[in-house]
Image 1: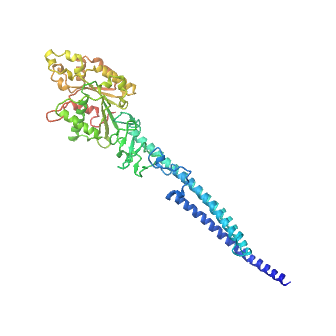
Image 2: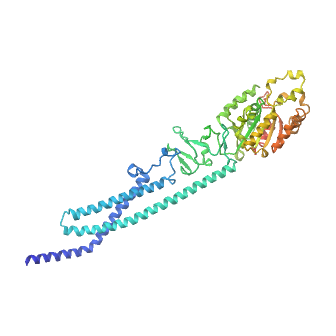
Image 3: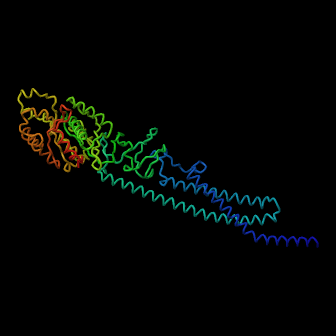
Length: 521
């Protein structure tokens, strides 16, 4: 009877304690729920920092391919919101889910062992407390799951919103870049002075001396919006208008170096057409000297656009100064002579092409003359010594005073017909273009009686001389039919005693390059 009473009293006391415990149990459950929720949220924050910032192997999923330059077609790091951000989101979600499951499983297992399986005190005391903790863990898991789902959803929305903004910005900048190129007349491409191809957009080298990796297309896109980060971590501007023109441009076809300021200023292509030994190279040298002499006397500024042009110009100038003969142009495609002319809005990048005369008479060679597609002004060098009528109009003694080896062996009509057919085949807009006919070797002509009363400074006088004296009426009319505008010039590609170019070159240069504005359109 006594034991029964004692057990009854203990039961009543235990029940009373349980009732009192039930009053504080919700607080314990809420506390455990908050603890687990905070722990899970903290783990997610650590995962985000590790994935986005630290990027150590601990915070990477190995089965996801890393965004590294060696895995890319371009030697550059992906712009964050063009792939890596989405990958980081996936990685963070996978790691958070993994650690969520592990943490929750560990919490339930530890509670079960400590309060149910292997309690350190009586189960009468540990079981109610364990059940309370179980309730708290369930509440914590539910709360944490909702909050983490919200954070992941918010993260996802921010990533895709940023991706949209970045991609729209990149597309807008590319459109602006195309509009700027169109305004400069470069929307069809920029001329490579080495292989004559039209380059839609140059390749660029990383400016770091120890890198020199080559980037195919640095415009805004997946590898950067305003700046591109090279694999060496050097930065390259993505737009010509923001500084990419300061980088070394490279032709994607021949891998030759492009001229300075390619893409920054409008380009003018000036082909010099003529037969072998017609005087093309000397005429080009005299035109270059005329431009630099004019700049030295206060005219529009002129400077070399590449080192190759500067080196060749010094040789050509020296040859003209000593009144020597320039070497014939090689059959291999020579690099164009490129100059930056003018200043401000009138500045132009001028490419003067001097191609071997054989290429104008051989069909298999003329296909290389791709620059004709973009040219709107052409110079045709007509050697009067190559015309039979010229020699027939001289006496035997007068013929003996001239060196026939200086005459071009090719009929100018053949050269003109062949070259115009080639230009048409390449979609050259001849009917929208101008033609300057440079009657070469005027320094020889003016010592001959054949010149008569024809003035050296008038287009009509030069045309009349070609038609009346040399019998080239058909050629002159063909030129005027093929081109929008034709002008004729007597030219002497020689220098005077004070090392100035003959005055006959000034009208030709001025007309070809637009009265000092250097605009050949």
